[in-house]
Length: 191
Image 1 (cartoon, helix red, strand yellow):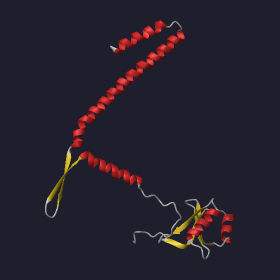
Image 2 (cartoon, one colour):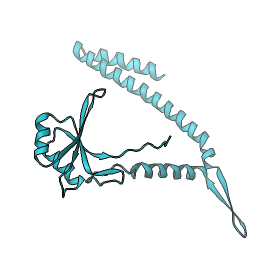
Image 3 (cartoon, one colour):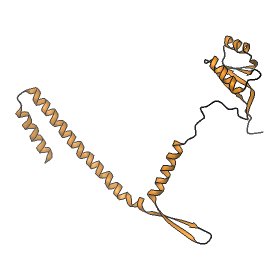
Image 4 (cartoon, helix red, strand yellow):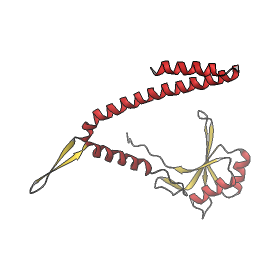
């Protein structure tokens, strides 16, 4: 009935205007209204389906779960609705996500497995390497890792300087190279 009425209104709107452009605009507007009404009906149908599904499933969420606690002198029973239990899990999950511990952004603290007087420098060029040596650092070892395509230098830090101070010093003076602490790694399998 509504579709027939819409068609009649469209025909009347077209006859009412003599100008061709105006009639095209009116047709476009009426077609848009028709589509909006049709989509609105479809939207209501989807919403109705969702609402009916929720109404059908809601009693399952309202059923209480029986929790029994056996104490030293008596037995306690608590009825907990399923929705409350699920809500508790959701809140706990959100709490864990929000309070997730990330890596600290502050200055580096020396760990027990770290070498206390060495730093390593990745891929320093010759000029940078000689400048680092002139500033008081000593090259202990240079490793060419051809399979990785990098060169690593182990440096002994100057006397009186800590590893975090050396890291800050080298990173501030040479921002183009990567400097890190020399961590001592031992295998977990002794065999």
